[in-house]
Image (cartoon, rainbow, N blue to C red; front, top):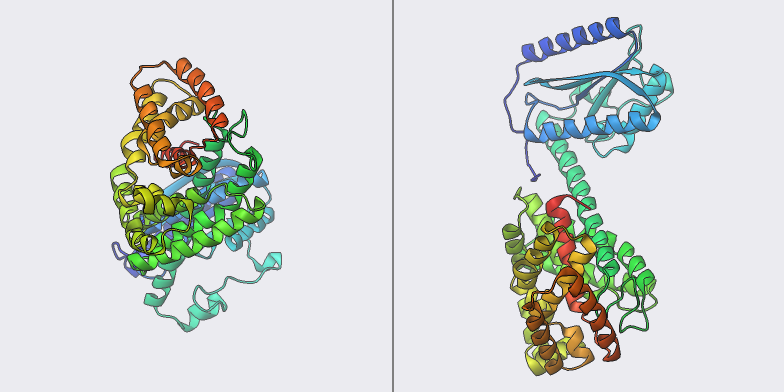
Length: 460
């Protein structure tokens, strides 16, 4: 859902609003007379003459869902529910077999705890037609959206203009849904990293069978690291959402967040580099997804790739500095000596190994009936054949990396069955461990495969 700056929709007259309120009261009386139980009547507090829009409807649907969750959590039995959708605003009516004051208390907690709660108007009416108030429960009245003072007092004095109230309403809605989407994306990123480390067998890499060519890490360290990185992934996404940032300003903030994330990673792993490459790649992807969300762009691979290219564009300036300083990290030294650009080169080109090779391969394998683990394991050789994996080159040499890529490319043409692939990967694991080879850069791309697939399919 894109950011919106104002309420857009058909304007309703005061007479139409008064008529809608009367019709709502009639419906409430009908339901109370028919069922004789507690009634929830839910609408939204939307200032001004516009009562329906895509933004408002999305907010109503979220409120309806949260009310349902709250009722389930409190074990309130919903006997009947119905909705009315009109240009004067959407309405939900729910008849509950539960004490009215208990229901009101639960709905007040919902209004106070939800990021959208200040926009919710959840009336609770008992079987006798009495609307239970907050004051009956010893609670304070509703607060003003803008100043935080009594909403009733601000309303009576008209302290704030309709335009101010609408602007604040839009801000509340946008902030809520941006935060919710950030949670979804960051959770998907963590799951993708966990799926990658669990994928078995993976030659030379940490998996469920062994720690590969590593002596300082295992599955536990990867799981702990992935969980600790969730706040960073969330921040990456929200950085992309911020349309006020320029391309270079966005990347500068991403890099700053990435540095902090790496420090966090090393702290929880006692100095071990479990996810440095993944932090960079996931950071680019999360920011790209944030910008897509803010601009209301549909989620598809073509748009995502273009957004990744835009988010990573400032990386190009890195290479001049690397040349000038003769490289600091192993990957940078490989660039100076061999022209190997590694993950930064992948990012600048829009991750061709992911979008052109790995993701299509993974989807093909899944469509053929393979489970996530086996499809991921068999996708890894395609990644190794296509990517410049600086982890391999740093542990051996650039020439060895090129030879391994050629060997895997040839292996890809052998027409192996899934069972034959898994057997071969187990054999290669022994060889890679003996030669101290770890295709960590390729593993990062496999994590991206899982990440993009989760987002595109909506399946964990």
